[in-house]
Amino acid sequence: ESVSPTVCGMPLKYVSLVILAVQNAALSIVMHYSRVSIPPSLAYSPASAVLLNELLKGSISFVIALARTREVADLSWGRMTLWEIMCSLPYPGSAPFWTLCGEIFSPDCWKLSIPAILYVVQNSLQFVAISNLPVASFQVTYQMKILTTAAFSVALLRKKLSTTKWLSLFFLAIGVGIVQIQTSSVAAPKNQSVGSAHDSAPLHIHVMSPLKGFGAVTAACFTSGLAGVYFEMVLKNSKADLWVRNIQLSLFSLIPAFLPILYTSNPASAGFFSGLLKNFGIWAWATVAIQVIGGLVTAVVIKYSDNILKGFATSLSIVISFLASVVLFDFHLTPSFVIGASTVLCATWMYNQPPGKEPLVSIVLTGQ
Ligand code: C5P
Image (cartoon, rainbow, N blue to C red; front, side):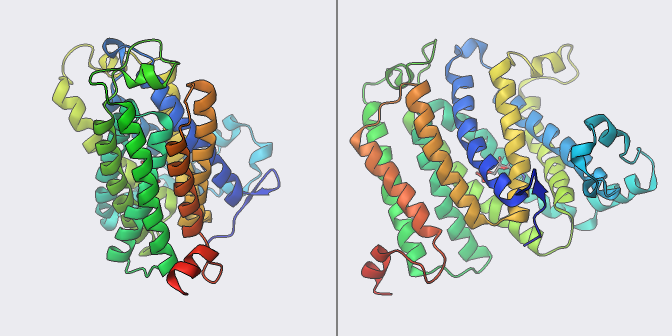
């Protein structure tokens, strides 16, 4: 674990975790609103949003990696304006610039192609899921990625899980199941808009399909688990800089992110680029911006904290988005939702307990 720098006197480790919790909650809400508040004919393209996310994240990672070649990161950021920082960066064609390019196109860069494809698929599935589920249901079900991450960690990283951790994963699955049952029952009348029944905020009728939403979120949990574990494997088996790895990840993401766009429009045609940004309003841009921040903060969390603390931040984000959904979308908390969500939160907390500090429930149930 690296020594964490400070931001305004606070360790970056904790600052990044808090930002990730707020970012997770904000993304679900803003992305959901950006999809359901607009009639389908005026909807922006999720494929363009995924592509923009990768372009922006890769560019910012490149600037940070360039800054690190001049050790600008060690200077006092607080006393420099953004312009001064930009001016102090190595110019294109300079020796540090070419050194960085050499690092980016290193012989082992292909390893990032696998998590890159998986993350693009995951980011696309997220749009399908959030467009078809109420925000809180999406957040809770998305916690299943703890389960897939554990399974892939055991299979690929040969990690050993304690009985308490397996038990908490079992509770997690039960909790998600309870939430799923209650959401499906809301969707019972066929073709009725769950958006209008569940979320009072949408200005237009947006027909949600919870089955499609749950299918997408389940698939996203698998890609999240596999991509996360694979990224961890690549990071731990080499000394390459995290930001260089991030650039490689974004570069490989561009190919699968471009494919669905090329499938629907011809890049040689006039208006191709304006078509990419068609219907991109304030909420679409806000969604992309929050996703970019999330990608960068995830990288910082992986570097200065660990996946256990990342799990805490995610579970905290559920509470934040629950409260926000009640206020913003008039989300009604049903008893089964509260029971399911509480089970998920307790399971997440139990999973994150360090060895030797297991909660009483697991000691009683497992006899350990
Ligand atoms: O939910 P999960 O933690 O799997 O989401 C990870 C998100 O962070 C994905 O959207 C992925 O594109 C992004 N990410 C990133 N850079 C990394 C790791 C993840 O942009 N190094």
